[in-house]
Image (cartoon, rainbow, N blue to C red; front, side, top):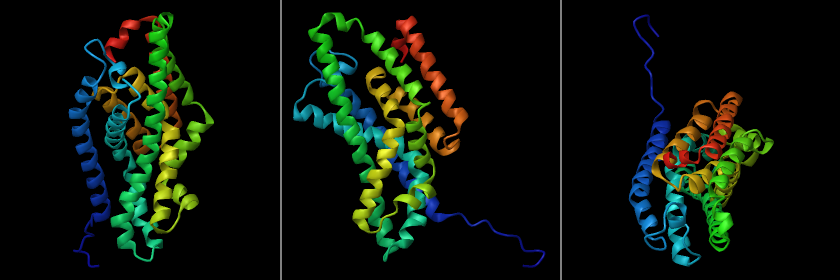
Length: 271
């Protein structure tokens, strides 16, 4: 290289393509959530239904199925931006172990993401059934209905406490370290790719299940609550990459909010 020549920055095209694809899918999912959420609310049991009661309305196949569709779309909207590092690592490194890397990228990437979303669909089903039973109990036992504010505050506090647990730390470490994840869980073939997606989704659910419970049971799956949690998750996984100080800050924030809800129930109006 001569003195007049300067190094030219060559952008990582694969990184750009992966980031653009995931952000586009997330954007489309946000748009779909925006239009589907009013339909979900309207599917509740009459004009008196409101909040989460209008979302979790019955055990019919249509109600659960519609909820699962909206839930999975919402998970794609919230989580795909935070998935950029691990999907990029899969495309750049893991696919090179395959006999046909191009096929692995084109077919394997959607399969990996599908396995990931399947685990969130399982979480959604469990959350639906748990909230449905809670609502039924409060309707059958009027004394329990008065404890709804207590339940909301308790969920927020439990979410904060979970941030301190070893399980949270273990799951988060597998989410923020693509190299560490694939070093342990790398499998070849399309079936192996689905299994890796399921495993990564399991770690992500283990990391974020409490946030999703807050979104459903406290925030009633409102778009602003979803956006706030999505931003927090993206910071946690992509920007600070599981930094302990941020984890503790989030914990204190949730515990403080939970205590505030117990002391001043009207705060729930603004959540």
